Length: 88
Image (cartoon, rainbow, N blue to C red):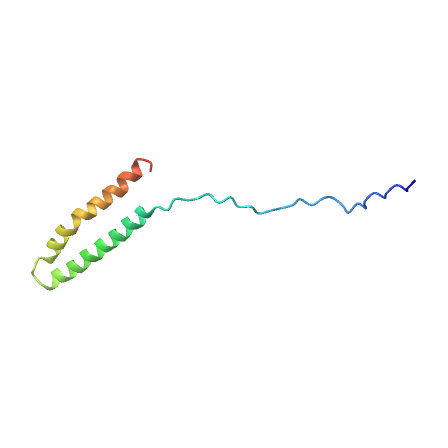
């Protein structure tokens, strides 16, 4: 008969195994926000340039630029904020 195997030597309390696992949740990019921000910045830049040009000359450029681009900007803002309030 073979001799009994020796029990393993005790090394002290067992240490917990710590792992760092990340669960990647696909996040839907919200491009509407980026488009709305870029359009707003462009709108403000155009209005600023028109205001400076209007102060130099008496051509009424500010009113023309504001009238031309305020409608599309209102549509962009309405689409973005209208979709956000519906929970989307």
